[in-house]
Image (cartoon, rainbow, N blue to C red; front, side, top):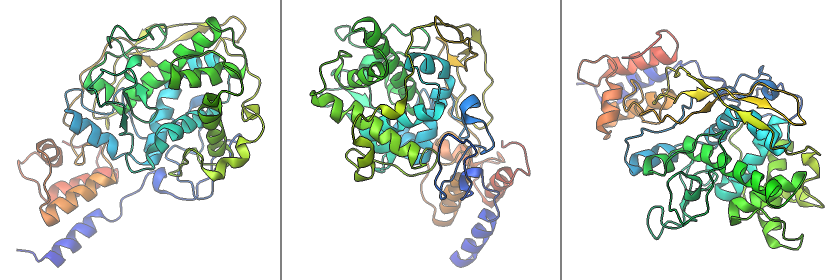
Length: 414
């Protein structure tokens, strides 16, 4: 039997030499001229991408959900809990990119990275983008039980249960965003990080419509009011002396500008409410940098179009829709995809996904190595995922096979 020292040496040699993704390559600068990126940024997406045109490209391979649809609350939340600040950011960007044309038309904002920044500001105001150690796993106002309180919220944006279909019928309806699929209020949907972001964006689109239709607001005041409503439930303008503006939408946009101006859209840096580093962006009208776009309710229609899942996704995406914008005052654009009304059950098993976070990466190699070395406990699903050679045992052979996969020496596992 090998000594612990020898076992450590063997495991270390197997874990060594992995070709890391761009996320692990420090010092790469963003090629997009519109936003500065700190020299220490570790960008997960290809820096040669035209982000303004094509988005970041979903480098973490998020599906239409981040967790198994039949998982327990504990299992689902544990997956979200492990997300890094960078993963939390890209999880938001994935949904923004899928619904980019809806968002840009409703916000009146053509700069995609400024919209990324706005959602970073919202995520910071609500949950500090996972920088508090919770990843995307943060729940509030749930003491009365699941779905009982209209303030019950979860995730990076703290999306409330009111955003979901079939919530308490006494809650105000938020069902006027036909361009985005409305998920049913279930535990599995509510606690999923990707779905929570999707529904958070949908919720904002609902309040943009309310700001324009119900209260005749224009310009940046539409987005400002929609953010206020995200927190209060009302998109009406209540005067500049209303503390809701300073403490919520104006704080969000100041934090957003910090991410944008200081170059922290793509790294693991995060901010928080009242962070002194954003003080200069709170001066005067903090919305001045947002620009003079015209929020619009131009019609955006959808047509079904299937999308193939990425081989590293834990679950299959739902069929998606490819919208076509028919603007009233904006040019025609070709949008990205968004889910339709079919929720596809996810796969529980993913060969190589030892940490059960929905993808296969270097952390799975480390998790398996620790398990083999110290006999740490892993779940039944993790054990099945770890047995990539299918011989019924978890061994160094499985570790070596996962290493080959991550090094791109083999194309698939299992």
